[in-house]
Amino acid sequence: MGWFVLTAGLPHYGMSEPGDPGPFTFLNALVTELTDFAPEDLDWVVDDERTENYRWRTWSHCGSEAQGIRSLREGPDDTNAFIDETFTSVGLPGTDLRWAVGWTKSGYGYRLGRGRLLVEFAGADAEARFCGVWQQVFGQRPVLTAHPGPQET
Image 1 (tube, rainbow, N blue to C red):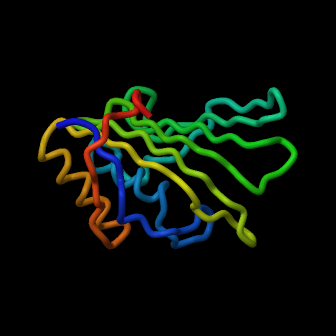
Image 2: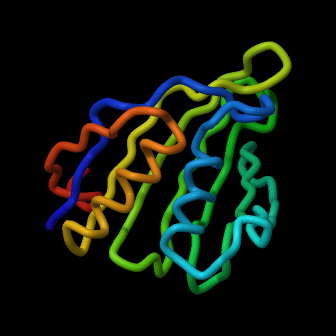
């Protein structure tokens, strides 16, 4: 079906405030919908952390190494005001996802700032499942527009 970019349908929610749906809530629900993982079996596991060239980086995953979501979170080591994070799907049936987000310090937590979600579906059923999970988590349908894909960005 090709790649799509999210052009509307994402509320601006927080990262660390209880009850706020955001990328982590959505990605956990998507992994649960597309795989055999039960919600209680999904935790974000830190794989590696390091600081180099004045930037810190944390690699983590949700699901398994073969099926789920991988994350790279990074920021400058002299401030925690801004954090960049990239989520990438691994082995999700019918769905390939790349989601780059920017978190901004806001009071005691972080707020979702800028971002871009690219997604590719193997067929209409995969797109419907993705949109259904999105609707369930965020309360609105995602608006997806054709896009050339991550290589041409």
